[in-house]
Each structure stands twice: as C-alpha cells, then as structure tokens.
Length: 170
Image (cartoon, rainbow, N blue to C red):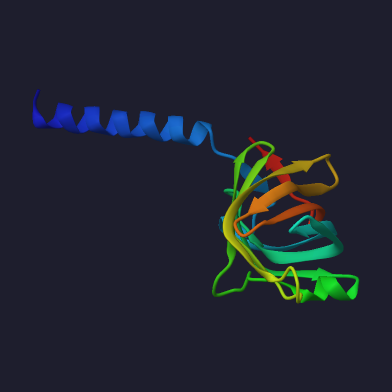
C-alpha cells in the first residue's frame, strides 16, 4: 500500500471512529454562544441522611453546563431548618463537583462531599461519585438523586428543578 493510500485509510478509520463516538453523545441545549458553558441553578427539596437520621432541607446548587452535557457545580448549599445549615457542601469554583450526562436520562456527578457539623452524627462524607437522573418534560428540567450513597455513611436524595430550562438530547 503506498503512502497516499495509507493516509486515506487512516483518515477513513479516524472518521469512522469519530462517528461511532459521537453517536452515543448526549447534548444539553441551549448551549451558550459557540457551545460555551452557560450558568444554571438547580433548586428543590433534598434529604441528607447520616447514621440513619434524615434531615429534610432545600438544596440550592449552581454552576455551569455546556452543550456537550458537561456540568460543573461550583456552589451547593442546604437550607431550611437550623440543622440544614450545619451541612456544608464542598462544591466551589476551585473544586467543583463534576457531572456528566451519560445517557438520555442518566447523570453521574463526581467529587460530591458534605461535612455534617452536628455534635453526635457529624463528620465528612465523600468525596464520592453519585448516580442520578436528568429529565425534561418540554418545559422543566429535573435532576433527581435517590438515596445516592456517599463514603462515610451519608446519602442524598433530591428533586431539583433547573433554571434555565435545559433540553437533554441523546
């Protein structure tokens, strides 16, 4: 095989592999200009469990999402009753929780860590990767966590609605 045929064969293989890889890609729209990340927030009821004790709070997460389904949660807080404010989430701009839409309705978030600052059941949980769901009904996007376990004996459940609305496309 001559040099030109080898280059053409290599280019064809690269194109074929690229098509296969992108066939499974998930997108979130609307992306920012040129596919840039856009800010979002996700708010809703959440339960943080540690040592068999459930604490019902309101969760407020914020960060960015890009058109390829990459999510950076750069702020997370639990609000509500006084004990909710004792649950400190680790998500920051310098150390975000990193999420990725892995399939049409599946979400994986890595680096999730909370520090429960209560006297008896306190302690750090995580960092852990948690699995969740993401879905949209045409007008609202919902992120769901169902007893997502964290190392250290915690679990988080939540149903969060995002602003802005994001359409998840397989």
